[in-house]
Structures are given as C-alpha cells and as structure tokens.
Image (cartoon, rainbow, N blue to C red; front, side, top):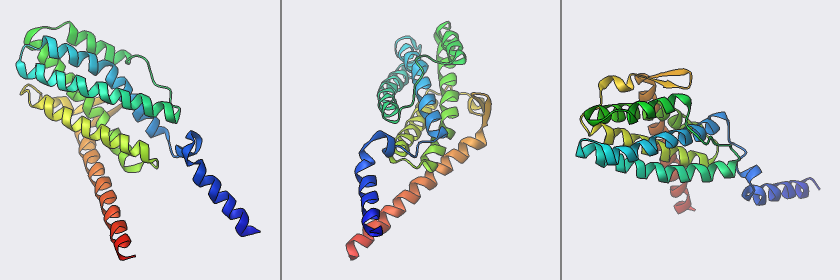
Length: 216
C-alpha cells in the first residue's frame, strides 16, 4: 500500500512538471529581481541605443548602438515570455534614475552624446552583471538559470562593444548604483568567477553523466 501511494505521488510530480505552479517552484527573490532589472534595463537602454545608432557622432558609436538595440529587443521578448510563465509582474517604464539618464543623454549632442551614452550604458550593464551571475550560479530553476546565462553573455558582449568605442572611462565601472546598494569592481569580478564556476560545474556534470551513459 505504501509503495502504491508513493508511486501515485511520483507520477503526480512527474506529470505536474508541465504546469507553471510546479515547474517554477524554485523561483526565488533573486530570480524575480533579475527579471525586473533586465526589463527595466531594456526600457531605457533599448531606445537610447536606437538614438545612438541614429545620432552618434562617431561611426563606431552608431554601430555599437545598433547592435545593443537589436540585442535589447530580443532580450526584452525573452524576459517578458519567461516572466509570464513564472507569474512575475514586470514594470512598464524605467526607474526615475534611468529616466534622468535618458534625459541627460538625449539632451547632449556630438561627442558629448557619444561619451554620455557609452559610459552610462556601460555602468548600467555592470550593475546587472553581478545579479545575473549570482542567479546563474544559484537558481534552482532550469529556465531561470538558462535566462541568467543569456543575460551574463549579453552583458559581457555589450560591455566589450561599448569599450570598443575607445571612449569608455575607467571609472564608469568602479562604483555603480544597484537600486540602493553599491556594486564595486570587486563584485563584478566575483560575478565573473561565479559564472565561470557555475558553467564549469554544469559542463563537468554533463561529462560525468555522458560517461556513465556510455558505460551502461
């Protein structure tokens, strides 16, 4: 009788994995925060990057703006789809601070526009990176972990692109605002290490499971 009951419970859990309530039972506050932060980033960085594509005084800034804007369009679609599945309500507009950055960048012209865009965007990407790395390493949900990895990869690519303009200031990643907390360069480095360790651990597990499968 006990084994029969256990079988029913296991069957329920397995078949229930397709429902939102069970499939995403591992979502925690950091997972939710990442979804919100990525959405907010896209709400201001996407449009400003389109401006950079059109208004940048340097050709490289225009090229980088186009690439970042395209990436944010794709990432925004992903974050909205995932948030809908895990029932996380997303904001419809940037924060007040982000709106002030938009106003600052939009109000500038020429080389000042390029400089403000590159350094504001670079600092903002740095502030998201640590959180995305943490979620990538610690989330218990597969879909959330995969999205966090996408966010980590996207942020790294964007910071590299912004730095390729040659006008990124060395201080723009030293201390950046993270919604009341301060994130320093050491935290960003720690985030990189966390992402690398998590990725390595996952790769190692896949290799072990594959080897076991070949022996069986």
